Amino acid sequence: MTTAVISSRGQIVIPSSLRKKMDLRSGDRLVFELDEKSDELIIRRVQSIDEMADRFNSWIKPGTIPLEDTAALYDARTPRL
Image (cartoon, rainbow, N blue to C red; front, side, top):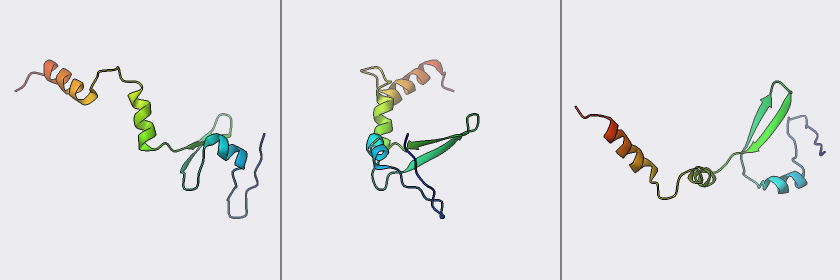
């Protein structure tokens, strides 16, 4: 377990061992969440758009073009007025 001290200004220094494990760098943004049931603080790095896109793309079947396929499906099911 690693500990940190909160300064009088409410600041903490994330220990270098954790920064390395989380691949945190200067300028990275973090999200703080409180699990109210366990009273634990959860800290996550905010993902970049590229990281999120890679994650979403991993869920898409190969050969699928999501927006075009969704539009075609909508057009096939919705009669035009």
